[in-house]
Length: 133
Image (cartoon, rainbow, N blue to C red; front, side):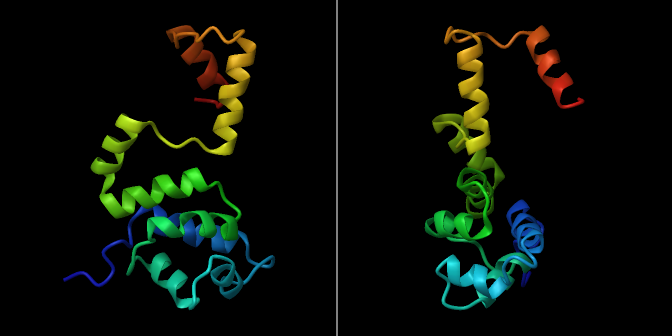
């Protein structure tokens, strides 16, 4: 039986990276306290993949990690429900948008005069050019 069943999840990797990114600004113990965990060891367990992040902990942990809660929610749903189930939920309800994604959508609406433009091959190509893809 695997002792770290969630070690290869995107959430475990993301939390590890965010804690590393905040090194010098906050300790892992401070992040745990800010997230409302009684024990800093919970973050170590999430990072190692030995435990899941509870969905109800997403907002506080996102704030403590200084990351977008919608992104953390998507990663947590993948970990908690599995990638297939998380995709099914996103297909039915839509994927939660990050603050940055909401800004993109708002700009598209403004630039298009709020006409709900269809994504064409040409517009897709232009968008991908912006990101070098």
